Structures are given as C-alpha cells and as structure tokens.
Amino acid sequence: MAQYQITFMPENRAIEIEAGTSLLKAASKAEIYIKSGCGGAGTCGACKVTVVSGEVETTGTGNLNPDQIAHGVRLACQSFVQGDLTVEVPPESRLQEHQVLMGDVKKGILQESTNDILDKYGHKPLANKIRVQLPEPTLTDNASDWARLSVELKRNLPYEKNIEIPLSVLRDLPEILRQANWDVSLTLTDLDDKYTITRIEPGNEQPPYGLAIDIGTTTVVVYLVNLKTGAIEDKQGTYNKQAKFGDDVISRIVYAVETPDSMQEIHQAVIDTINELTDKLLARQNLIQADLTAAVVAANTTMTQLFLGINPRYLRLEPYIPTVSLTPSVPARELGLHILPEALVHSYPSVASYVGGDIVSGALITDMANKEEVTLFIDIGTNGEIVLGNQDWLVSCACSAGPCFEGGGINFGMRAMSGAIERVEIDPETLDVNLTVVGRILPVGICGSGLVDCLAKMRKAGIIDRAGNFQLERSSYSARLRQTPDDKEFVLAWAHQAGGDKDIVITENDVKNLIRAKGAIYAGIRSLLQMVAMDIDLIDRIDIAGGFGNYLNVPDSVQIGLLPDLPAEKYEFIGNSSVKGACLALLSQKAWREAADLARKITYVELSIGTTFMDEFVSALFLPHTDLSLFPTVEG
Ligand code: FES
Image (tube, rainbow, N blue to C red; front, side):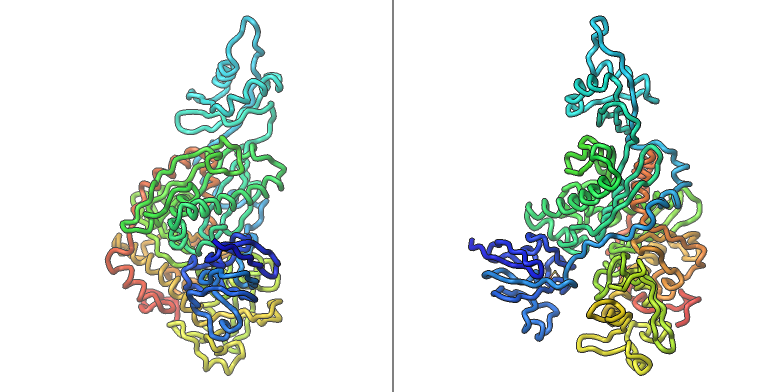
C-alpha cells in the first residue's frame, strides 16, 4: 500500500501514513488529538481541519458550509489520505489536556463529607503493611525461609487465615531477608479468607498507599490515599484519552468492536490515562510504583469492561447484557498499571449495562440503602443515572442525557476547569451579563453549572421562550442578542473580554440541546416514580452527583425543570461520589463487601420498554415543563 507524508500544523509534525487512512486516525498516530464527538460517524462536526495543500478523498461534509469547504475545511473523520498533505488543526478542534478541577487537595474531600460513613464502616483497608523481625536460621533451626516467615506472620496478624505468597515475591525472599538482617516489612492484601503477600522489603515504617480511580466517560480522576491514616494525600485528573474515539459510551463501543486492534487501542488509552496521572502523583509525592499497594476503580459498565479489556459488544445489543457484574479483582501487572505489580485492582460491581460501578459507588456514599427515608440519587452526567429507594427497596435507570452538562455538544461547552464560566447573571432590563469564571481568569468556555444558570437567567430575562426559541425582538435592548447566518445567539463574553478572537456565545441550537438533556433527566425521575407508584413529595432527600465543579445552583435547576420543585433543604450536592466511594472501599473491607450486596439489591428499570419514558420526555421539553402544576414555585 502506498505511503504518503502528512504534516500537521502548526506543530509542523510530519508522519508517514498509508493511503486511504482517515485524517482523524492519522492525527492520532501523530499524537495530535482531535475532538470526535460522534466517534467518526461524520455527524457531530467536531473534527474540523483545514487541508492547506494536497488532495484528500472526502466522503462527507456534514454541517460545513460552502464557504468553509472552498477554504479547504474538511471533517477529519470523513477525509482520506490520497497523497502528501499539509493539514492545519485549529485550537477549537483539539482535545485539550486541561487539568480537571480538583478542589483543595489538603482539605481532603473524603474528610469533609464521608467521615461519618467511614466511621460507620470502620478503618480496615484492602491492603496493609506489617513489620516483622525473624529469628536467624541456625544448624538446629533450619526451617525454610518461607516457613520461618509464615510462623512469625501468623503470630503478628489479627486473624487466622491462610497466607499465600506468589512466586514473583518468593523469588525475592531469600536475598531480601538476609540483606535486611531478618527485619522486613511485608505488604499484604487482606481479602475474604486469605492474606496474600504482595511485597517484601527491608524493615521500614513507610505507610502503604492506594489509588481510588474514577473512570468517567469524559474525565478520569485518581486520588492517592494513605491506607494507614485514611488521608487523601493528593489528586490528579484529566480527560479520558478514549475521548478521541467518541464522546459517549455508544460511540466507544462501536469503535471497540471494529477490529481486534481497535479494542486493544481503546483499552490501552484508558490505561495510559491512569498511568499518566499515577506517574504525576508518584513524582509529586516522592513515591515509587511499589508503594501503591491496592487500587479501586469506579466506572460505568462500558468503561469497566474497556478498562479490563473485555469486549463491550453486547452492552449495546438488545437485550443489553454485560459480560460480568461482579468483576474479579486482578493483579495490576495483568493490566499494566504503574503500581505494585502484585497489588490487586478491584472494580466496583455494576447493576446492569447502563447502571455501573460508579453509581453503586455513589449510592454507597449516600448510605441510602441503610436509611428509612426515601433518597433520590442522581448523577447528572452523560448517562444520567438515577437511583431511588431506601433500606427496603432500590430502583435505578439511566436516561442518556448526553454530554451537554459536561460541556459536550455545546459550542463553547467545556468541563469545570480553569477558564470555565460557572455562574451567569443577566440583567433582565439591559441584558448585561455578569460572569463568574473558575480560576478567576479570562473565560474560554462554559461548564455545566454555568449552562444551568445561563438557561434559567435567559428565560427570566425573556431572551428565550418556554420552548427555548430566541426572542429576537429583545435585541433592541442589547447587541448581545443577534442573528448570524448559522443561528441565533446570545453573547456571554465579547472576544476582547475572553482574551481570544471569538465572542463566547450560547446559540439557539445549544439551548435546544440543553432542554433535551434536562428533559431526559426529569423524565427519568418521573418514570422511576411511576414505576413504584410514588408521589414526588414523598422523596425525603435528593443527593446530586456530577462533574459540576464547585457547585450546582439548585433554584436555577428547578427553574429550568432539571430537578423536581421540592424545598431546597432536601437537596445536597455531593460532587464526585464515584471517586469518594472508591476511597471508602480502599479503606474499609466492610464497605467493599457491602458494595457487592448493594449492586445485587438495586433493580434496573429499562426505559426503552413501553412508552412511559418517551411520553415524559416529550412533556419535559419545555421550561420548566408542559405541566406547570409540577413546578408551583416557578412562574410560567
Ligand atoms: S464529524 Fe468527525 S468525528 Fe464527528
């Protein structure tokens, strides 16, 4: 097959590529990551590039206008190499390697909001470390090294269980015992009916560490946890490198099943993401890989299967069956994680194809399964999972809200990170805007909480009607409201205020996407309530999770009909409950065992059966809803 040279600009990075390769794949090979919301289906328009010189074969132009096409703009996923090329990748088409907003490290989120729950479960981590001094062998005391060690260990360990030593650790045993003068520290995995020795080193008091990992469809977050003290010592987060294969789980599954190579590629992308974050944590804390003695992963079912390298094909085919719900714990070396090779990696169990371990982890944090009061737990993210219930019953569903609240599918949408507009005020008279930006820097986009604010404030100011249609007659009050050749839009920040060459705007199309996303979540809540024949007023508590950054504005969420019109004191915003649940499991064997029971206890409701969800969804496509009696505190 003919090979051609492609040069990517402005990096001026050249690589050799086979004829017929898409520009999207070619860029990825050159380690230039282009947004590909639809996973290369040619529908999202996120992968725009400019062909500066050379010829490509184009199979689709999506939403590109004739002017753009005349200027060489192409969709990278729909353009195939036919000769030597120079291709410019503009900033807006790139996946940015921004840091995910992590909050204050030293405060320790676990300490803030899960102290009670850790007290309840007790501090007994999944791995610990013990120091032992062995008697030296003599001609009359000639037991083997391992027999000598296991006798001493049994004397020091709190429970009588089998003790196992893998061959790889056994190989190190004779030399380390003698080098250390028979004073050694042993790292042990303590799970179920046995102890497993995962590391032997000369005697020291250094604590063991563990990783709590949240693999989100969009972002990956890793917490470094001191297993001895229970403190979160550090955190790191970034984009999931799988994002280059599609924004949502469906496009990732479609990509993964394409070829055996693509399955390996998408599996490796998430391992690489975790390893990159782990390496940063190790460097910052002056630790080595062997100090990381356990890991707990919380992720949705697709992410868990891709993380473990299990083909996700049947997750999206009726009747939507995962390969495994109670996932086995596996040694890190099988996955290539940058931690102690013998350390066990535990993945949270899932409920069903679209309610996964991240939700079980979050539900554990809410403690809803142990309370008499009825809790509604909602994860406002791409998959929109909801759990409703109490100690007697638990039901769940996933309402596919799409990536809007995580910034996807919105022109200037972004994750809650530096430069994201997180709060919006609009003067109803002058339509002047007041913005709060994460990191107090010039704005570059708008995150989930900003979008919720924006929708509520635009409605209040009469910029949009209840269906989300722009009211252009209001443009006489302000130049911010305007018609462009492509769409109607409202300017949140002028280019000079944003430090760029473009105004930051919300378009009518963005608004419609947001209304669909909020409608899906509200319809999911209503469908679950109908399923258990329960009135909304009987909900005692609502716990909201999601990547909203610093906060979620509950009154504004009610204004737009995203959340039920219930008293504000019933609501609590619990942030990234998925990673908190992973921390909890790392620190408490009892919590980890309970997670498996919890996953079994939650009943999954398939929303695609029957018409309830669709009817509810259509009724929710208004601000706040077609049925205003559901929102008594909101003016129509
Ligand atoms: S249009 Fe190319 S990835 Fe979506």
